Image 1: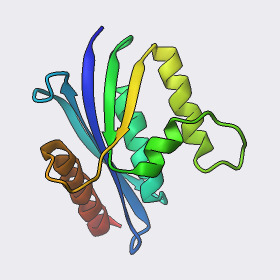
Image 2 (image 1 turned 30 degrees about the horizontal axis):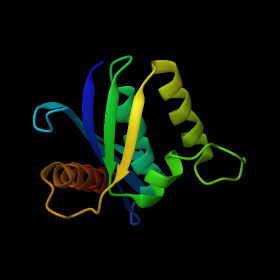
Image 3 (image 1 turned 135 degrees about the horizontal axis):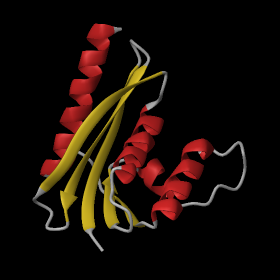
Length: 141
């Protein structure tokens, strides 16, 4: 079973009502870069952008792999660890998609929260990717 480490970030620009997400996927050695990506989302909050970054990263994983996902968004880390119980639960649509993706791809995921902006290079890289995507979106929209 292949093992990976994933860092994610999400952001939001109120002036243009756009969000951005970013992820970095590393091999389990914690050094070798597999993939990095950022994207812009219209009309999405930073919370949803973070969760969508996690979803995008999980979707990029090979079938039957395992990953440790490290996010600096505590609500996302806690929320994705829960089962969807009620329709009015925040971000329930993303939670359902996340659980379905993990089940269908037979993934083993360990979701962990770490404080952001603590000097961890890959957390900082995700933050930079996200900030750059937001800056580009602000110029376009």
